[in-house]
Image (cartoon, rainbow, N blue to C red):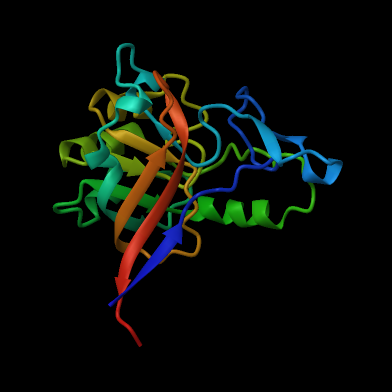
Length: 223
């Protein structure tokens, strides 16, 4: 058997779109070998929910767990990547159609991830436009996932929530139940199936969220 790894992490660059109102991404080389400095050193100016990132309960829930106290046994372990051909949202009926028996970590692949190819192909260093029409998870679907014992939910755009939901009910439904949310995944080249998930957010003390490196590992037969 040979192990195959898939990196679902978006590169952090000035081309990344951000949630409207969040800090833009800035990566500036402050020390440079080309300028005769002893080393290359860069300054990063990013929000805690930049690119591929984890939402901790503290993001929306007063007194909720911060990102540095998230249980590792949720961030690491078996996960199922599910591909859904939906236009607007992932609904309760979509969840009911899935076999999630024994699944505690579920990642959704939708039309959203095609946007990340646009990001990779962009010639400009300016931020790509934020897409307000991304596929999201509605609150009844989130509730069903909680009822089924899911402990981690991942999505392939910058929010699990509808852009036009000022109540943030999907976030509240998941985070109040202690479900960890992964946002900004890029599973474009990854086939649906079962994998080993490795999700490693920056350990920001008291953080409401953090950028993360997210990797899937599968076992493939040697040819």
